[in-house]
Image (cartoon, rainbow, N blue to C red; front, side):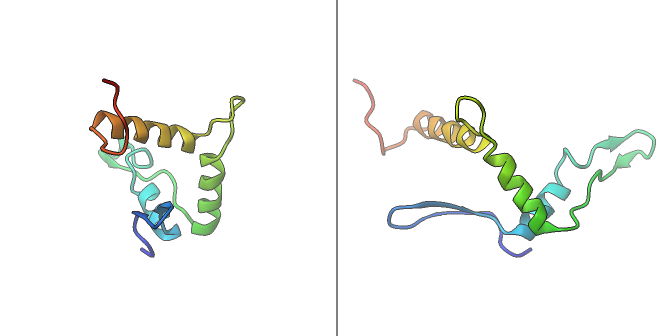
Length: 97
C-alpha cells in the first residue's frame, strides 16, 4: 500500500491523507464489498478496483457531491467529528456555564 490513512496538523491546516492504493485496498476488503454468500458458505468480493486513481477521483466526487443546501458527505463527516469532539470534552472550545 502506498500511503496509509493519516491525519495530521501543520501550523494552520488539518490534513487527511490517504494513498490511492490504500483507498482501493480498504474498499476491496470492506464488509460492504465482501458480503456473506449462503451458496458458497464464505464471504465473496463483489468489486475489484482495476484503476486506483480513477477510483480515487470517483470517491472524491462522491465526497463533494453537493446537495441543495450546499452540504456534502464530507461536510456531514466533519460535522459529526466536531460534535464527537465536543461530546468527548474538547479543550479547544468554550462551554456554557
